[in-house]
Structure formats: C-alpha cells, structure tokens
Length: 77
Image (tube, rainbow, N blue to C red; front, side):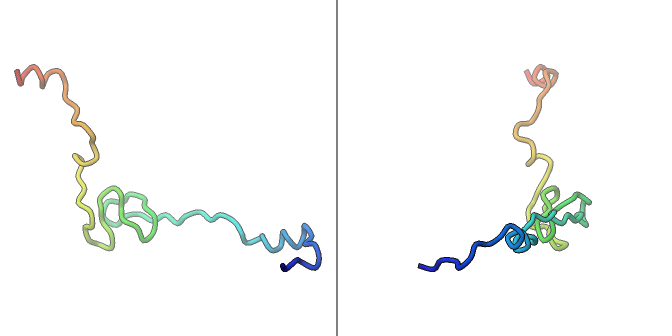
C-alpha cells in the first residue's frame, strides 16, 4: 500500500489548497423582462431563454389559490 515518504507541512498544504475556494455565481439580466438570472439558464420570471419562450408562464400560474374577498362571495349568492 502506498505511503507518503515525508509529512506534508502546513505551508505546502496551504499552497496546494490556495486555489480551492468558492466563487460568486455570475448574474445576468433577462433581455425580455429585466429580472436577474444566472447565466445560461431559463429566466424564472418570464420563461425566456435565448430570445424565445421555453416555458409558458403567467401570473395565474404563480398563485396557488386565488384570493377572494367577502364582497365577491356575497355577490355570487
């Protein structure tokens, strides 16, 4: 089984790991709606990617349940 010949010092270990760091993801703006989005991804707001509609989105899709006021329920009865 391979075994290292000598122990790696703290300095050498630090130099090896110097480029191992997190980077900030690049953020671009959607040319259609102007919302911030990640590069090379679909816009989550309008559904555009590369100047075409990939996903049909509307405001009604974002709402789970339509809000009804008490006035609308009394008019329906």
